[in-house]
Amino acid sequence: MIVDVAGLKKVYEGKQRVVAVDGVDLAVEKGELFGLLGPNGAGKTTIISICTTRARATSGIVRIAGVDVAKEPSRARLNIGVVPQYNTLDRSLTIFENLYYHCKYFGFSGPEATARAKELLEQFHLGERGQSYPQQLSGGLQQRIQIARAIAHKPAVLFLDEPSAGLDPQSRIAMWEAVKGLRREGITVVLTTHYMEEADELCERVAIIDHGKVLALDTPANMKMTLGAATVIGLKLRDVTGATALLAELQSDALVTSAESTADGLRIFAKSMDGLLPRLLQLAQPYHVRDISVAETSLESVFIRLTGRDLRE
Image 1 (cartoon, rainbow, N blue to C red):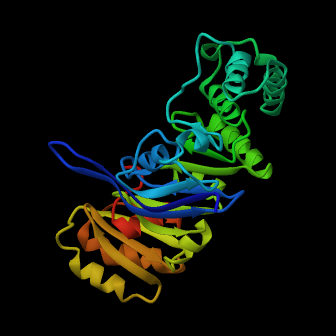
Image 2 (image 1 turned 90 degrees about the vertical axis):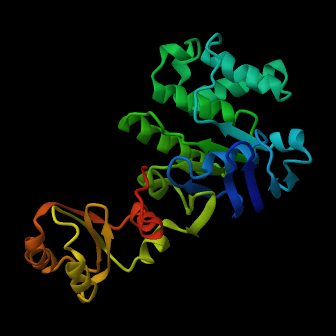
């Protein structure tokens, strides 16, 4: 395993004791693109911070390429590239200089650092921007530069913490393509996200995390299959208190895998939509339907089924 996390726990003591990570076990294969998926505050960033030596665990062990990050942090950092949630480019340096001095920090000679910086500028289609300063570029381009800088010293594992946060859709897609390119080069990538479509698009395996615990770990396709449903229907009702009978009737329907109450109505997991929607609207009419939504099964559906709350909270 290139990333081996065993019994990881992080507790913040104080007036209010907070368990940020609660007994997490993870194993990431060399060359894998692995995702940590969950809402804000689930513990994803804390896990990444411990793996990248920016925070110390309360208990448990993390090994990167066989190196214990707590016992040998300096040696572990040689194997680690990090793109944090926030932009950390040096705004007083040009794009080329941001890459060049990162290489120098990791022991490259002057000519080696120059060659590597030029190589990365070409690889990330930034050859004409080398003399620009970070603030002169869009957020999407700055994120690509952060990724380029993180892999400049050729680490074994790249950690991306919420890599598309704050990016517009076009920049997000460009970032996805850059990450896929790293995967094709054999670089192991571990990313955190609360965008379910990002995890579905990029990751070979995903761990869904909430309240510091791993709720599920599998391929996105296998996770979605566990629902046994192709469609998720959200039903908002004006008369929520009177919907108990409707819930019971839906749970016995042959097309319905399961149904559950929500704060403003019902959520129905259905095997098929054939003939279900008209029947559903007819049954729900006495409860005054005010809105209905229909979506394909997704990783967000899996998360909702596991926790009962929305992934983007």
